[in-house]
Image (tube, rainbow, N blue to C red; front, side, top):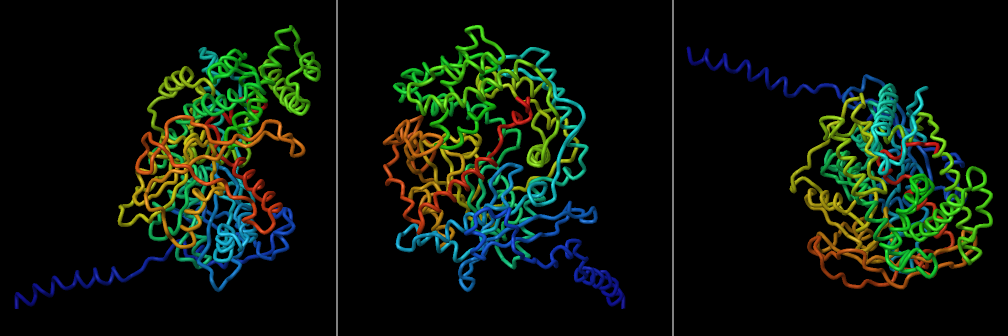
Length: 621
C-alpha cells in the first residue's frame, strides 16, 4: 500500500504539470496578426511616374503595429507599405522588401521603382531576362519605417537654440567644446521628451517587417538593404533566422559592433576617400583643375583654406558627392570654386562684395565649367558669411533626423563610460582626420530613452546564407567595419569591389557584381567562394548641368587607389579584369530605364547613412 500511495502522490504533480503544458496563454499580438491587409490604389502624388501608376501593379496598404512589441497594451501606430505586384502571380516566389538606409530613410516608393524598372527588362538579353523574371516572380515591397514618411511620424524640438560651433578639427578651445556639449544636451533632451522615440529602434522595425511578411502569407522574408538597411537586415536575420529567406546587404555597417563603433569609423573613412580617391582624380586631371599633379599637392591647397570655407565645402555638397561616382567627379570643381572665393576674400572684400566679385571671377577658361564653378562659389560664399556671423540655429529635427537620433541612441548602449572619453577620442580624430574629425558631440551620452537588446548571432546551423556587397572606399560604411561584420556572420558571402568608392552598389552595371545577386534571388545560388572580388568601373565623364556635353572625359580604366584584395581573404593581391559595364539595352526602353535608375540613386543617396553627428551642427549654415 505504501508503494501505491507513494506513486499516487507523485502522479498528481505530474498530471498538473502536463495540464499546464497544454494550456496556451493568449498571444498579446494576435489582433495585429489577424488584421486583414487591404491593398488600395496609391495616391498619384506618391507614385510620380505615370507609367508606373498606370501599370496597375502598384498598390498601397496601411498596417497597424504595436508601439512596443514587448508591451502591446501601450498602443499602436500605422506603417505604410507599397508593393509592385508580381507579374506572374501563379509563379510568385514571395516578396522582396527594400530599405534605402538612414536610419530615418523612407523606402515607401523604392520597391515599386525597382519593380517597374525590372519589368522593363529586355528578354532578348541575358541580364534583361533575369531582371524581368525577378519582377514576374516577386512582389517588390517598400515601406516607410516607423517614424518616417507615410507611417506614423516623430519629431524632436525645443525653444532652446543651438549655439554656434566652429569647425571642430581647427578649434579645440574650451569654449568650442563647451558649446558642442551644450548642443548635445539640448538635442538629447528634446528627443528624450518625445514619447514615441522610445519605440523607434531597429528591433521594433524588424518586427514590423515580420508582421507584414505574415500578413502577406509568406513563409520567408526576402530583403535588400542599403547602408543602415544592412544593420536592419542583419538584425532581422539574427532575430528570426528561421524566417529569413534571401537577404542582400549592400554597403555594410559594422554589423558585429555598436552604433558608437560604426559611426566612429566615419572620420577615418571619409578622410581616406577625400585624400586618395577625390584628390587622386583631381591630380590625374591637373590640366583641367590646376590643383597639382599629385594628391599631396592638391591637399596642400585645400589645407590652406580658412575654416569657414572648409566648413562650407562640407555643408554645400562635397561630403554627399563622395557617395557616388558622378558626384566624385564634381568635387574638384567645388575645390576650385573655394580657392577662388578665398582669393576674393584675401583681396579685402567682405560681405556682399564677395558675392558681387564672384560673377566676374575667372575660375575656368571653359565657359560651362566656369558657370558650374560660379554656382558653387555662390553657395560657398553664403555659407562662409553665415559662419562668420556665428548665429545660433534652431533645435528642430524633422522626422528623418529624429528617427536617426532615436535609432542611433536607442539601438545599442554607449561604449564610453564618461563624456570625457568622447572628448578624448574626438581630440585625436581632429588631429588624424581633420576633414570630419573632432565632431563627436556625443548627444547619445545624454539620451534618456532605454536601449534595445541587440540579438545574438545564431550558430552556423541556424543562420541562413546571406549575400553582401561592399566597395573598398565606401566613405560612410568603412570597409574595416564591413569586413568585420562579414567575418562575424556564419554562411555569409561577400562580393567586394576593388578600387571603388560607391555607397549603394546594386545595380552596379557589371555582370561581375549584378549577376551573382540575380542568381541568388532567382535560384538560391551563391558565389562559389565566400569572398569574391570584382574590379571597379572607371570614373565617368563630368557633364554640364544641362545637356550632355562632356567637360572632362570619362576615364578609360579604374586606377589603383590602395591595396588590392584577392578572392580568398582581404589581403593584398591582384584582381583579374572583368568585362565592360553592360549597356542599358538590357531594358526594353533604355531611356525610361535611365530615368528610373536616376530616381533610385537619388533615393539611395538621400537616405544614405548620415555623417554621424555633423547633421546636427550649425544646421542653418
